[in-house]
Image (cartoon, rainbow, N blue to C red):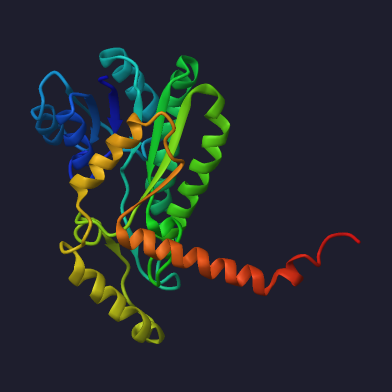
Length: 276
């Protein structure tokens, strides 16, 4: 059965792969883009089924009227895919606080603003699926991406909570956490803070160099991620959390094992704080 998708950030990367797969499967897809040229290019992918909205997800006041006009034009939305986002790289001490605000505005507040705009209609219709693209960085951490991981941890927690809140309304929520995929995330899309503190050189310089060298050579195929997305939106009981990629599965499993070991080691102290 054909569905109507709204996907943020469809000009490249995961967003373009998701949109193309949905169009190829016969669905109607509306995508957010940043300018008129990108809008026209996206519409040309499948005239009549591809629709585009020029919208910045951090323009929070513009989102409700833009999506209301979109729904009036193409009908109710079945699936929202919050894909728009980017990575910030830099040690916490060297990264300005404004960079963190921008990271959270795009990766967290923008996603929540989109959800709040589509959720009332989904709840009233007792039908819908909200897919938030998070990251394995919403479970594990690596030096130099504290702001990014923080934003993805936040979106994972929001997704998990929202899933419990809307479960009784026929609305599904899935947080999709990719590992390393061959997108622009580590390349031109990455915002990098400058270096200023030599104490971090030994730790962080090799991490930055390795990330730059791997960009464009990651194991993950965005087209296969897009097929996985189509499978979960068709599933009668989709997952609340879905990892994508062998690296994501291996690293998150290792994190959970290490966390269990730490909980066990400190369990007596953890249990010592209740009233007698």
